[in-house]
Image (cartoon, rainbow, N blue to C red):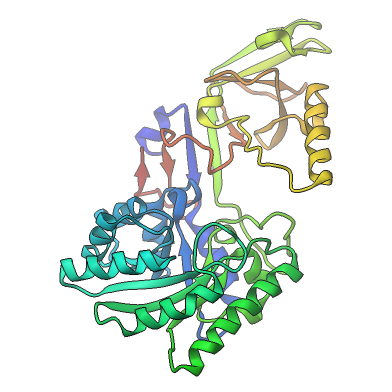
Length: 388
């Protein structure tokens, strides 16, 4: 055990062997000639963009996607020289920086095209661009009707390299919607081919569409979620054997003994039904525990599910209570989560003591960046990467 880990009260373990396994599962299902764009946005989904990208490069991945230029520059500053596409359109000065750092950039409007062309002229170097087509997501990009003249202009511009064109599905789990978007995108591609405009990297599939629609793989697929061991919502596939690569761990700070009827936490929201031992764990809201993203419900059924979940949580029903794992056994987090601590009720017969390791359900994208990431490479091999 490395010295920092021996002294840490909490950390995140990222299993690079699991990522390697998931990559193999993905490659089994890729069409011949299709490239894999590993999406390492949002700090590689909370896993640590630099170490994860380095590991993927060693595994043969040569194309990466990020949302913001700051994410791409972090990779460049840490020695990543491979191809990186920035998904978000940029300001003029950021296009200049992107071109200087050999980053591929997104063009989502006629204005974007003029900005990047002017930036390329200023830098004195051709800019690599991907045209973004909005077929229904509504975030940014050219409509199919707008795209054709912009693509023609980009194709003819001497300061630009038209490297790619892509779209983003709005509801990849709904086949009828996805097929409609794909047909719209494919229609544009066919119109371009009729005008002898051939773009090398055409891409539209994220993880969900990749699994559901192999005929849509085209020249590249953008893979994030399943690469890191999770299926998109509602997309579990028994034929795809993914391995979880993320584990949030902590050491028990103290063991407390309470009588039946004692209350736990702020506002006394949980009352112990029996004499119990309680573990004090140094993980709380500031680390991302108990923090939930609450998007607008997609429909009445979704709204009902949210209300049922909240009601069950209020009633302290175990099915909706936060859990943790100690020595392979499930335990329940009781009471309100504190800013920097939580309390776990210990089952009778489970022998634990302060310092024992707990695995907690902190969502990877909500986990605090201040929590150190640890990158083991095999059970017997110590990690050589550590991100504080």
